[in-house]
Image (cartoon, rainbow, N blue to C red):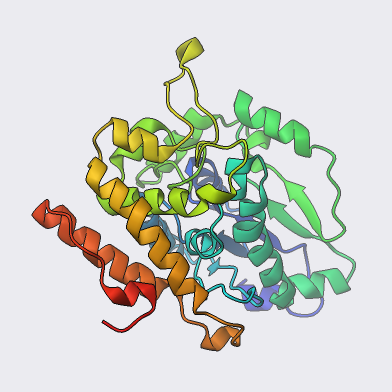
Length: 335
């Protein structure tokens, strides 16, 4: 029975939706549900536009596998509908933070970044999903599968969610039903002939480890320095994207609260390039933004235009090893 026949009037069962974060657990959940012949009516992945480049590649890789298995899948994204005067158009979480001159909420002790980039666009998509809306009209709830594994860390996360009741969604945790911990998840992915995904998180996430930070491409480093410097005037009781230093007790890797400071200490970027970003690029971006008024969103300049010039200069710095001046256009003036 194909999906169209299955959801002819009336529905014969609850529709099943899977939240895919592109990490090990949610990937294993999809693989195992497919292997067991369990229905999957939609897999949703929310794009943050700030993922590790390796995760971006894995999203394409696993999406192709889902297409081959006829597993319906969609990518969703939160697009701004209202922007304050003087703020450029932006695309994704990094550009939003840079446009407003703030750090992601998780660096400040909140989870607003995940709510904005992941939860909101998925909830908006469900409102347009006719199958799900039909289920609600018929008094059913959508079964939403979440990839919490059976290990100790996710057991604590599950305990926080246990008993949560939603009028639209019936929450299900298949990996916990099947007693699958992280190791079992990795093996399930490998048995399917697939690569195990890398850690899934934004490059500027507070959860990024020092070794992961050092593994990112150089352009990610300069963009992280740019964001921390842009947000610095607004920071209170927060040193940067890592928020506060870790001293390295109980086996933890010591690090400062600022990713910029760590990159400086490890010579990932030269002091000259970091100072160029802090002392020249940030004031230029502020001046460029100051020329933006309250135009309709469709007519606002996009911050990606400014970033393209910024990236071009730093690509040349990486290639030549010489510091270069930013063009006047980065101030919003003619060259």
